[in-house]
Length: 94
Image (cartoon, rainbow, N blue to C red; front, side):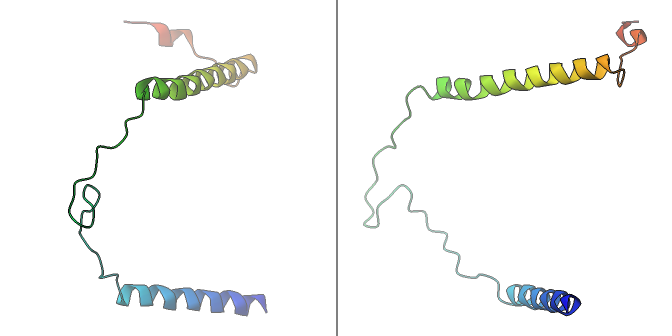
């Protein structure tokens, strides 16, 4: 019974996809109303977020520090268990 349901679902999906391809969305309006009202008046300047750069720093910096800490712990774990030990030849600058 489940095979019949799976097959019916596949046929249904193929038919639905074909219908979407036959009737693409044609009602796309390229009207820009973000800066004007419907009557044509210009909207006021958007409100600026104070301390935007500081907010970005406070959002990104903890993520970088946490990611670096996790990477350091994983590298130590791999080296302690001899899963990955960098060779001394890799440090030569010749």
